[in-house]
Length: 300
Image 1 (cartoon, one colour):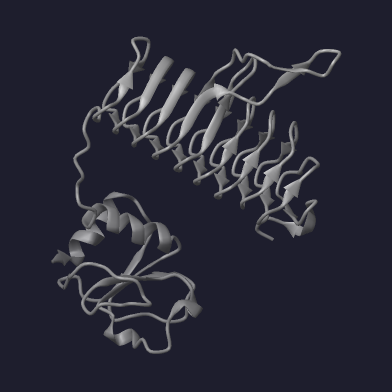
Image 2 (cartoon, rainbow, N blue to C red):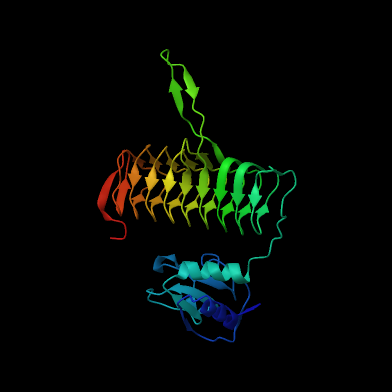
């Protein structure tokens, strides 16, 4: 059982803005989703249309509720950041501690690798080359990191990720026989970066491929050589950024494909399955194939 007053103290100490309505002396018995609500638990109400018709709000023990919604529960944490607050509570109070090994079974770490601080590396990984990994980063199973790679602090790299191999670039002789070009750059990954399972990030041909601080990359994404991703980008599963694409801060890609050497502005949003063939301005929303600007800009 978890006391509501302990949750409120945590939110206050974390300096997360909220307002509480109800009895602070009560206790909750875990958490559940709103659709499959379990009696006596904490739940989350983020949108008005997310409340099922068969749910009586008075039966909910405690809810985190989005601030502008026109209803409440008997005990409610009301905030403008309901999603962040709800999942922060789950992580703080209900996430069982998992003890990860410093280095998992079957993992190889080359002699040039530099690990600074408390880094956890899973099973059957291969980390070999001029590589640095900073404090608080977690690397899961079957990850391959090679050549020149710098990984910042507090990153999460899920299983099956491949970082640092040469990208797809070749030259041709007069008979059009192809010869792969040896790459000499590296990969620079900032702090607090998330890289989902089975994503591939190629190193740069001469300069580095760069992933900015706070960027979140979903599963099965492809980041080609020389790409520069700004701070706090979001790449949904299947997104492909071809060679030398540059993105501004806070750009969002919904399973999109972006042609090589394009510039995607800050706060741009590239819609689901869009194929981008031209540069995008700051805040621009692109949809379709080939992608075209939608009316207005992101947030309008």
